[in-house]
Length: 262
Image (cartoon, rainbow, N blue to C red; front, side, top):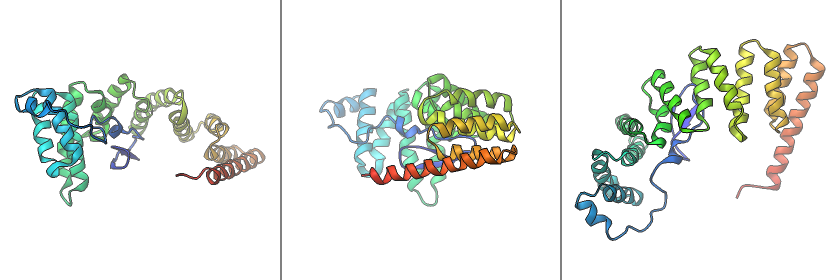
């Protein structure tokens, strides 16, 4: 499964981790505000906030391949500014994506800055660290930390990691907690919980999870429930749910035609 950094770029395949979007938390906005006149002189004088502001502005404007941006962000980060550390994560992430074929060095540098920012308590960095974790132990650690920050995706991501590691009782706890989240997170969690219960041989419970998905308008929920009902020896019910899944899919397609993306 892909854990994405930013709205349009996938960093890596991270088994057991679903979709947290750390790039959405990045401290650098997409469109730069005009640089205040005081910033550059203050940065030259050693003001940490000004160095960070100047570095972020230069990054946004893509000045000279981001070398000037890195200079000022590095200075602010070395002075202990956690947001600047995290901004350097994005600088090196971008270089990792664009470097051919040596992006791994920049990925490791991005990981190092993200880790420092997370250790300094910068919440967006904490939520991003599962992407950069060196192993499953570290990934689990940062997912637990992300849960504490209130990251709505973290319980489901943590459940996936624990599931992959064979810690089924803990995984089930976090799947169920994630299933209580509203909207898409809860629906994704119910789907994952259904799959988990199916692998555990708990077919009736799996069928109930997918029933909830179907009732929320998800065709896959109806189809998965039909599959389980077939395994339970209830073909007539299975056929009914399969038809419901087809009807939900048709309704979704009709809605897409009525409201095409602009």
